[in-house]
Image (tube, rainbow, N blue to C red; front, side):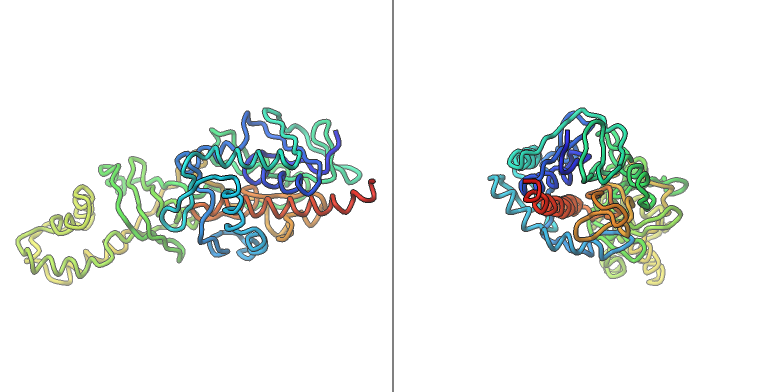
Length: 396
């Protein structure tokens, strides 16, 4: 069969790209080896899909070229996607930090995208291995199908149990596009050595400020039997590199609090003072980490300030992360230097596009990566639709 574009991947980016191009008049085929479309959408946000964020800005994305995202995000914004959600009658609500979720189910977002694809006459083939891909005489071949345009929308290798692979990178390299080394992002840390003492407080969470490489996120951290997790940890993991340290502020006003506690209850020990503000088991673990076992009244203020320094900059050197199996997304990917920021088309090979997680663009936790999927997908879909519109009069 002959199409105007073949889109590899029936995830969020691929489906919206297909719908956009199809509704502009292009003949579109979407191919995916999975048995159902939008599998990552279905499990996201606890089953309610954190589909975008009210605070989307370019600074909320990591890439070797931090300016690359600006064009696509400006041309298809979070407000544009929200308008589409509302047009389909999907009820939504805002959680913390501008995160938007469906009131009902994430399946509503998948159904919406599939409905948009039907409006555009898009053909979707599921449970279909992609197989070999070729290119000759200005046309791409995927199996027995051909098209002048090919869109890489197969995502990254995060969450392999959902069928995720690194196929996008192999396709890119087949056609001469560079790939920034992929790595797990928005992922829990593992700890070892003496830091495993925090294994004893597995399941304890508390608000923190997590820091690494000049980045800082103020959200919750969760101590686990393997190491550290929770929103603040997932956020900072995208900025971390193996061998580096991270720091947590667990009590921002620790110095003032400890000095006040010394005046109020001089016979109490450090653990009692910390337990006023922190979970009891965490207070116990931090007291052991600080190594002070004396009445507060017997401690000089310098000792209290030293303890406070630990509480405001609790430092860890992770042994690693929990890998792609637990990573929300993949950092790295197809080098943005290879792509047009306006259309997502490859500079070296007209007709080849890359969108979504396959590209070296990684958003913060909280709906940002979905917005990149929508914005980059629409950018490619519009470009394909516009090119098809130019061809149709001549074809006719």
